[in-house]
Length: 122
Image (tube, rainbow, N blue to C red):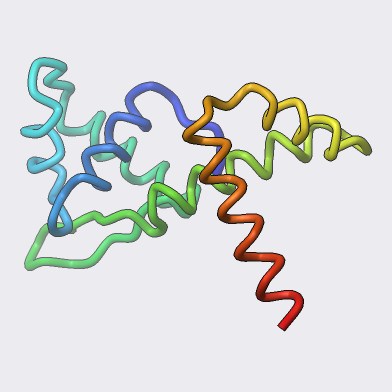
């Protein structure tokens, strides 16, 4: 996932939480108090499209926007990018990260790793 600015993150959160694709006006309505200009939100959605974060579909004369990947998939890509920045010692960065998670997150990681190992040994 490419680096996202504050407004881009807000727009993505709105799209992820939406039950259906939204128009630019729908995104603006969900932004509430921020109330950016229509053209600003349209530009943000176009940039998110260029970053392959959103897809758009025509609805009459307007477009509706939806996430191109799930929040979990986008977060996973962000974590992979962070590990890539660690250079040749991705393992050290990953281990350091694992040592900083809370017990519930550690349990989730343990369960995921157990599942991966069981699939490998089948």
